[in-house]
Image (cartoon, rainbow over all chains, first blue to last red):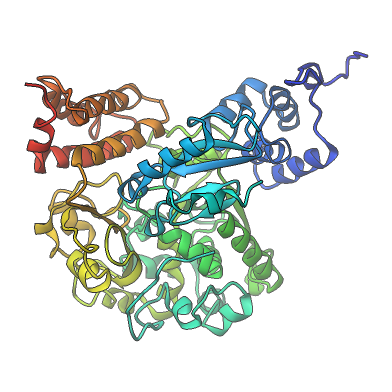
Length: 174
Length: 435
């Protein structure tokens, strides 16, 4: 039932048609992050990551819900969310593969690795496998050029990844 | 988790000669516990400063030491600090560590933070004291999760030990240190874009002036320094400016050591802390063992994607800020990347420009539109489908996207490898133009 106090965010349907509500833990974590800064909006990225950690991505309704906690407009927060490539505004698979495509990896076998991944997974960059297991994305230099090619799967960095050993990396992520 | 090769082949690695890495080499592993760090002279610079020195003394010592910014620009840290207002009326000030290491080819700050987290924490406390900042942030790229974990643990241990928090060692000085993690985008490494990102905004650069030293984070005086720059501060305070100047062993008028590195197809890749001014030849052939079997050196990037290519004939130059600048490039982060003779230079430059085009923040037109245009032309030349006039257009773009034509240094940096490749390898580009 709608009242004058109904949060606007609860009126925004998610992809499943359900309104988005922050959990108590999420709200608490966001408020904790806000205390680190002179202005609550500085916790924008922290807040987006908190929600993304639980939902894999940031649904539309979450933008409104987080913006309310931070006291900024949803449009403002959307501007932040869409700027940063590690914030996902579309659904992603259970595991996100971020392959470094910068020059260090390019010199040591990125093209072959990227092609092998696309063949193995049957998807192109930006897509998610039909079984929802993997999303494939490019990423800037991961700061391990001495152990290239490099990629991350979720929070873990894998070094010296080649078409020959890619299967051993992927099988760690069911 | 594997770690970079560090100081491989170096002997006699000690505090007098390798102030940034000796603890790691001596311990043979990452030094993450405060007790281990303290046993290796850890927090002794902090104790010395907090018990016997004024902020002005620290500023003077660092200025005398001629410590130049290790993030790539080489601006003297002491001069940067001297622009910040001091005194009782200065109000809230901030210290921000730029730990957003994303310059392609660069992996030194990752090592410093993962392997010696307390070293950076100590450095930030001493620096915050020197500039009178009571709040400090480590702006860490989001992908460096191990560094985040270890820095947060180090901060918690330092708090317990009384090195952080209120009234540090009875000095009356308070400091709160927070690890702020990002969510991607290379442009966050630009000083003013970093401040916007820290404030929870899109990472567009800001107009300068005002410089951050006067109006930075939340409009307050702010100093932004790179990880490696800051890590040099405690050793300078412990052993003095003269000792620091002597570390370059006469190889360069610059002072200190430098984290040098090698990537690309060299025999050995990794990191070495060497006197600043060490030649690329020594780095590549003595420490890196030369190029991998069967390969020859075609050209090299001295310090990241945004530096001009140099050639084999430049190998003997001392790797310092002014020498590499005079040779037509920039030392940048000083982690060299070797390009071997089996690479197609047009493809290499195309990859570099794709990186810059994607990472443009889109704020100003020359960068937002000029970089994708550059990529498009390079792709057609790469495919052998270049048209008459394409090379001239690329040359024109290097001027139109150059220094002074754009809001920040992103596009001018992107033009550095392009302009140097056009200069050194004109024939390779001409081959891609249709007759």
